[in-house]
Amino acid sequence: MKNQKNNTSNLSVRIISGAWKGRNIKFLSKKDLRPTKNQIRETLFNWLQSHIEGSICIDLFAGSGALGFESASRGAKKVYMVDIDIDIINCLKKQKDEFNAKNIIIYKSDANDFIKEIRDEIDVIFLDPPFDNQVLNLTINNLSLLKNLKNKCKIYIEMPFIKNFENIIDVPVNWELLKNCKSGDVRYLLFQHYDSMI
Image 1 (tube, rainbow, N blue to C red):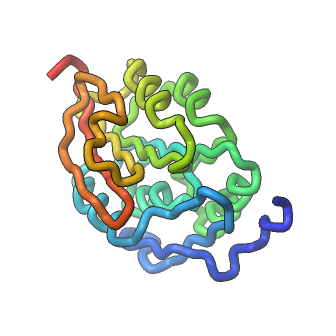
Image 2: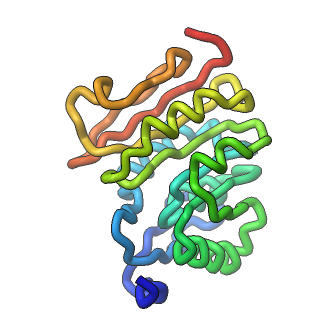
Image 3: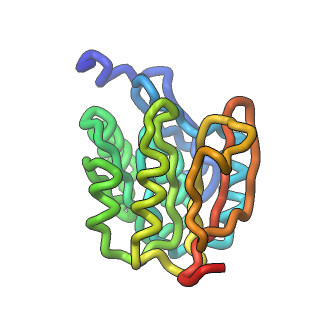
């Protein structure tokens, strides 16, 4: 796996908007590392356009960093980028340095361990785990236990396309589904958390 560290030459995604509009984020060739498609990212950030500036975001399973860097570019106050893979962490740190991104904080951690430690009040969460990893429901459950999600915190979930996704993921009763779209073999969802049951 170590020889993949520098395999970034042709692997990049472009930031869509904000302070770093048009700049490329390089990423590693890794199994299960799937940057969110440009079309999906554009749709997602159209949904979130009035919620990103000044926000505190968490990009769990950060991977390429596309969602976290896009948020930081668009004026998020603080973006936590979390991944367990040291090669990915090193790549993200290199990108952060190149962008002089003072509003990005990078953590090498298991996503679910990180969730239990975060103390900031959170505005936006990006949840895009590897498709062959059975951590989605565990992570949703741990997020549902947090006391520091702001009322109307937005939670973005990206998952394999499944027709009846409601039978696959356990959605907390105080999360409202705002958006539900499909692109190829990907389903992407936007939820809104409420402090009390809706």
